[in-house]
Length: 445
Image 1 (cartoon, rainbow, N blue to C red):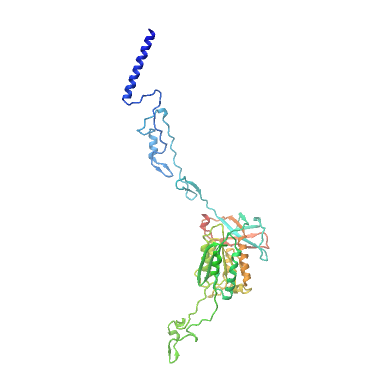
Image 2 (cartoon, rainbow, N blue to C red):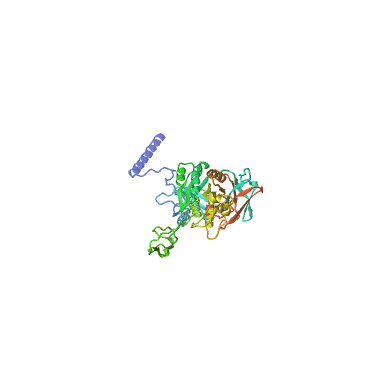
């Protein structure tokens, strides 16, 4: 009896379960599974539900939403309270750093990278040391040098004897007399042999105006010899010009066989086109040529030594710029002027007298001022062989200098002229260095 009752109870239970399942299937409802969690969408990331400002995160609307509710969207079934994740507290955006010392350079599609800009007042001084015979002295150390700026000693921070690549602006005077110009033309072929593979050269000329024949090109390339051949000139020959106001002038108007006063004729005392000539002016635009070369050199990289090399007799007349204005440009852009002095100014004794300027007359020699005020050097030569040797001599001197660097005690915002005095422990040696400079904003980039 007990067995029959158990079988009957089992049949009744199976029938009831089958009926319930059949009804649930008819109504397309899922069968609930005991102890199973309700499916739900993953919670959204914290801090992404309000307006987002680049660089500052979300705005006040997002903060209010996060603080007021911790619920998910209404379309998603609610999760049990125990399983609800707690969003972390929103952090306040950091204040922006000062613009002068920190910048965020954010590449496109990437994260912002920090960039620190520190303004320092670093000064670099190339120094040449020679003995009493004019020979370069090597083997000195930083302990042998002392540097003073505005009469204040500066600790030496950088000292180097490594050769430096040269950026040379080569300036040729084409207003030289024809016999001197012929020697210069012959010597131009030796210029390339004095330079190295990592040097670069630009060529300028001046006579009746300044001209740039080529911008900076490789010193050992094929372009430089071709340009130097174009720089050759016949020079100038002194003549005796006359105009219509002297006995040798033409006379277009006459009366009874006699010439009327030439001041009453066309052209007056300056002459006219009927055979009279106008006295030409003698132009030596050295200032303008150096200024043009300096403007090109100012754009060359800082790690190169900027040099202006001039082959001239040093005469100056007819330039729009004064030599003082040009020297300031040179001292601001760290440019040194070297030169080979030729012609009358290269003669012993006469070259020293040419440095004196007579009022209302042209400057007979002004090239020495550029070299002494920029830390360059000057070589006087008359023959072709001497001019060729001066190319190699000066290029070697400009390349193999002592490089001294220090941090100035002056303010970076002070643009006044700063005097430099470089001294060496041995009194028998001669120091060649720039006597001062003007600070430039390019040094702080």
